[in-house]
Length: 53
Image (cartoon, rainbow, N blue to C red):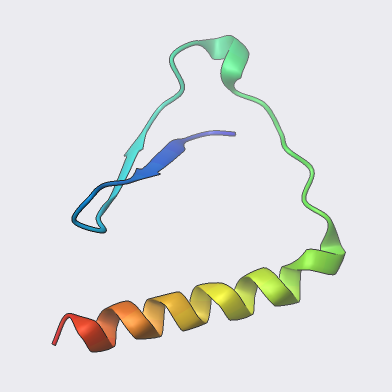
């Protein structure tokens, strides 16, 4: 993980660096989930951009 993210109450994302070098690490992501996560993120992005108009 290179950055941590949190969603704020107003739906903005807040990113920051880890608190220590020990928390910087690679995280395995199963290839089987890539299509599902990509699809979900596209839906969320579309919904947010539609709602913000």
